[in-house]
Image 1 (cartoon, helix red, strand yellow):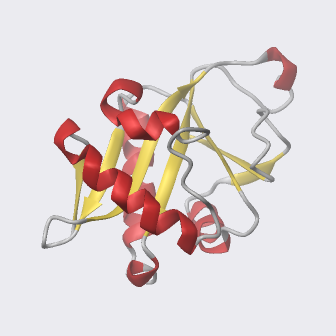
Image 2 (cartoon, one colour; image 1 turned 180 degrees about the horizontal axis):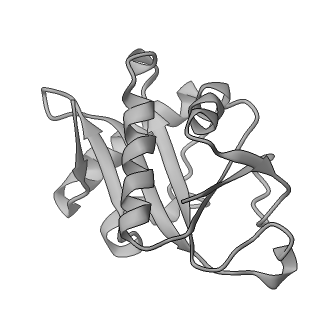
Length: 158
């Protein structure tokens, strides 16, 4: 298994990955709706990585994006922050340390990008991901964005 930066020729394979992976966690891939940006990763993300197996198939993803400061959430937000997005891993690869590897990599990358804080939002049904985030020191906080699909909000001081 290896984590590699996304390249445009993987887009079709990535779409197939999301079609398979999202339902495993109770989600629906909506390529013409809320997941439209994921159908053009090269055009919408500067920092997006895929976990590849030995057959060069995508088994996981993670991204780090800039998080614009919003004074509405000044009680929990900080300037110069990034946000973890799109941590997905096929169920058959759970329990092998790959999620932890991806999160650790994303944190290290966020530090090199110069962020001082790293945020994320997720759903309470993502228990294994939340456990990984907590292992790295993420703390639960109150809402910092308007994502109607998230009910857990976390941050980490880098």
